[in-house]
Length: 473
Image (tube, rainbow, N blue to C red):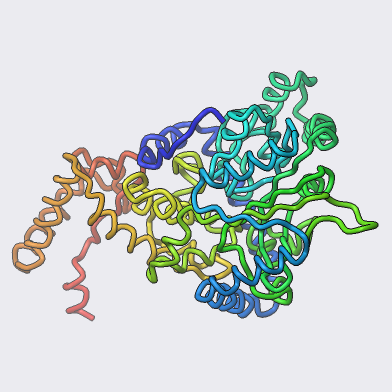
């Protein structure tokens, strides 16, 4: 990727660029609506799906509240299985551990399965700086690696790319024939990657879940590339955020039923792999397995009782698909690896509220994200908490903010004087006749309200005041 760092406070600028690009805006709209529709169909087939969500939430709540115990149990199980355990407090630690393992193996190429933690710590940059070539093998990640971009969606990283975009990237970077047929584009990528699986001495993956009881690393996918990354190379490295722990193998069935249906609308993803140590005699698989448990801001969140719930997330992406803001501004507007409602929580927590103060405010607080979350994370409440945190620790100073504060003070003053409020409402109702059409005001020239109507409509005042209607009722 060509870009580094966190650019979350540029969300307004980048969001406007997406809204102004009709092709890009339609790509986000159509893709998210399709995924959301598939989810609705899939969960309708499961009697008691809400009870399943309650069970998943309770398992995550219990695990996060007792995370120290389950992390120790997982570490003991991993080492008992013959794998090597590593602990990484920061992004730099993760990169250092992985680079050291690869260098010690003398490998020059690393095949990588889709891993949000790998994106988060910018592992590709660290490998390239050490003279090691990283190759993304997930089709979406492969596409955005060629494009030099970050993921635009947690589950579907290239959701914003059209077939024409992909064809141009393949022609430019791997000298393929030009085509826009999806099957042919997939075949081109398969041929390019097949050789890499054979050459690479190290495979890197993430994990969807990590089972404390058995030391099992669980990966879920639809393409088969993760299975190749974790079994063909001589060494397998799994990067796992500490929040991915679940207590028992019996708990896995709950999350497998929740994740596929919530994320892509599938009953079960095509490949579910349970990796328990390096290969034993007579087995296929890697000679060495390394498990890297990653903090990188998670312990700070764990220590905050108000934000701890954020760690329940199983990264299904459903909140992105339903969020009216994400669907309009797209994933790259969020300025880091994680986007959508969960990104508005994760980024300020894992980086800093100063670097990402704008994200908690990029929400209508409509609650759609909470409604679809498979483990019922109360995202709107957490966003409100972060808004208060932003005002306290990273207050915004600007002309627009001063105008906003002035307007709220005037509003509060008017609310304390009912007669003035009613007179003002009457004049506003009369004056809106010049602007309102069919119950909506599409353009208010006065600043700062003009900033609202630049990109969305403003509801017109009701013809009759509420207190008059209430008095009649």
